[in-house]
Length: 332
Image (cartoon, rainbow, N blue to C red; front, side, top):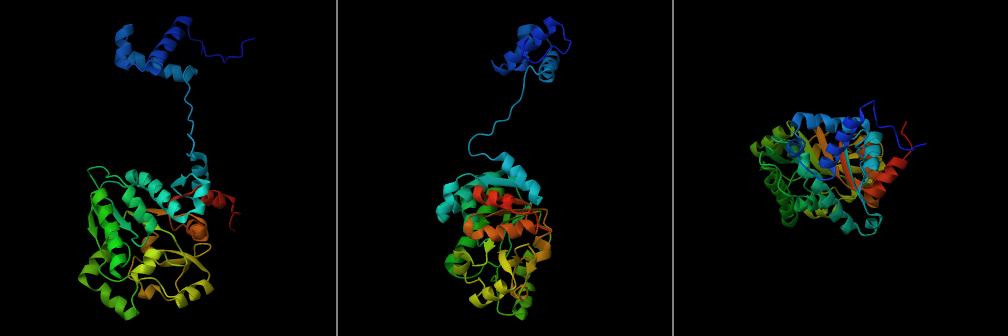
């Protein structure tokens, strides 16, 4: 008895023979439909109907095979578990042993994703004190001609000259790549008092940025652990050791744009909000698309808090972080 599936579908043998012949010409010999129609004396519409029949009868079967290094099933599972719209997982278990290699690899993976993530007319916010984001922007290629409207810094960008150059370069380069115009925060990220912050927020240059924050359609951010990144530390905009100790005492594990949260993603302020020149928490968390790039052992707890608390809608991370997130027991 034949082990092959019944492909007849009650079609006459002559019709089946023609269906197979057209399918082989199209899929194996890579002929265009117009060429097949001319060779067989058929209309192009007739060729299209025969190709559809080939799919319906199982003569042609589509099988998607992920190449090595592509983890589509894992990405889908992580997106479903944490209600994310997009997940990009970087391959390579050995990367965790080399933090700077991991940072550059995450940047490259993010660059490929970002080249198609933004839409014409987007108002894009960017967190500028992130070496991983800087690596991503440096690896990006220009996007479509009809680009973004603006690229806006999400927190203060004035500080130590060397760090400030990096932050300015990140914003300016992303604007260049996406076709938007850059909008900088001409103020420090962290000031000495609530009064100083209120005064700066009324400055016309800062006021323009704060109004843009209300209209953002997408943001690109890093996820920080409780200890500030080297770039943020260099900038002079990082919180002090005493403030870190106070945040830790309140349960903080990480931050996005200096807005801190605990292991479940609950916002933890510790009085820093009234001194921070940056996008407010409520505005940040209501931007429609919130793309984060982060991974590695040091940042795991922070990444977990960010996805648990729905701070982000898309995540670019490494495979070890992804597996650990999936192994987490469900939260109550």
